[in-house]
Image (tube, rainbow, N blue to C red; front, side, top):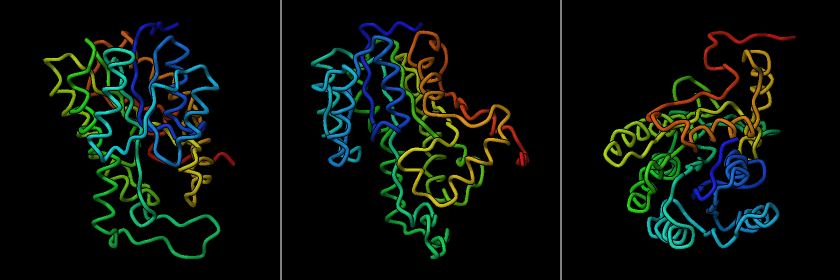
Length: 270
C-alpha cells in the first residue's frame, strides 16, 4: 500500500463521481494524502458533497477557471497556507464545443460539424482550457512545490491516431503532451516530475454525450488485449506517479487503455 501521509495534492478537473479525476482524488485520500479540489460554478455543489461524503476537508477547495491565473494563484496559496507545500498536482481539465470536436449528438439527424470549419476562436478557447492551462498551473505552483513534487496530466490516444469524433480536441491533446515534455525538462533543476497518463475511453458525463462513444467502447472491449478500462484503473496507475516509486520517471506518456494503443486493426468479437 502506498503511504501518502502528510503529502498534499492539488487537483484540477473533478466534475462528479464519474470523473477520472475523482477516482484519482479518492485513491490519494485513501492513501493518506491531503486532497484539495478545484471546481467551477456548475460543479461546486457536487464536488463539495463528494468531499464531505468521503471525509475530505472541504475547506481545501475553491472555484477555479483555469484560464484565470489569479484564481489558480488563490487556490494554490490556499492549499499552501492550509496544508503545506504542494507534493502533487493533477491536471485533468479539458473542454471543447461540438464545433471543435466535430461530433453529432446522440439521437440527432444533423451531420457532424466539418473539421475544415472548426472556428478559430472556439479552438483557441479549447486550447487555453485543455492544454495551455497545464503550463499556467505549473507556472503558478512553482514557488509552492514541495521537494520531489510530481505533476500528472491526462491525455488521450487521439493525439497520435485519428478519432473523427474528437477532431479539434486531438489538436489540444497533442499540444498538451508536448507541453508536458517541455515542462519535464524545464523543472530538471527543481526535481519536479511531469508525466501524462493516456487513458482508454471511460464513460464519464462528458464522453457520454458524444455520438458513437458506446460503439467505441464495444470496439475496445474486443480489440484491446485486456479489454476496456474504468476510472479506477487510471486511479491505480496515477498512484504510481503520486508516490516515490516514480522518483526517476519524467516526461513519460503512460498508456492505461488495456493495450488498445498497440493494435493496428480492430478485433471483431461477435
